Image (cartoon, rainbow, N blue to C red; front, top):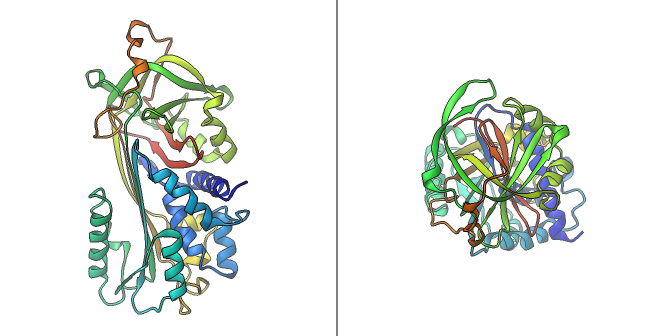
Length: 374
């Protein structure tokens, strides 16, 4: 395996690990890659049991050159003329701590990132305001807030990572088709949603033994970016899928070569999910405990003083509308003649489902989400 492939496999395994632990009744969207990139920077500085735990949770144990792999992967994902993917990561550290010049230089070289020094101890409110301004200035206004209790005067080091995507469907959903429709939540409660629909040729697959079906919704002309909607047969089937999901399954389910192209009618909720998560407890449950401990953490390559991670804050926004985003549609010309046909079947996401956005060329999972209610 190349170093790039090793990092992709680590990211995809990490995605499944997060999926298994993110148990919530709310809508969820995560960018595991943005978290993995930020945590790789900390792992670069970790020693002893802290390093061992981090490498295990992040699936870096078999990676020969983690940082070179990220250096190769990220530009291939970010530098696209068909979509806009933005990932930002910064470590904010208590200003009274002395940082290693070697670490600062390495973080610039490998991740184009420089740690920010803030006075959490004496002025946590001002530190919080600084981070808010950083968010506004570095995310084109996509993120302008964060819970004030995300930092306090005991904050030692906080990792802020953000991710958002602007991309248009290969085949847009006609605005005139959007209608009010019922949606059944996992508790069998019926609510209403805006349901988008379109007829076209789409890759689809049914996994009978898992009682679910998957559809592939590509973006752009070249279709290198694709959303996979994983829909259980039953309205309350989402919990079982999340708890039992494996890397092998998710890799297999999102393999376009194992799907069948059919002319179908697709129904998908019109949604936007804005998520801000404190990931400390999730990562802790996954086995990364030492790095969050003021007495056990060993990230001495950052500073020879006592240093530990106070939290990892993940901010992600994801939208699905008729065009895919607010931009102009980029429809595939091949769909023009299909209006003369009748759909063979329908695929309607009218109850909770999982969605994955994957880059076809690298096979990297970019976003993981769960839509549970309008």
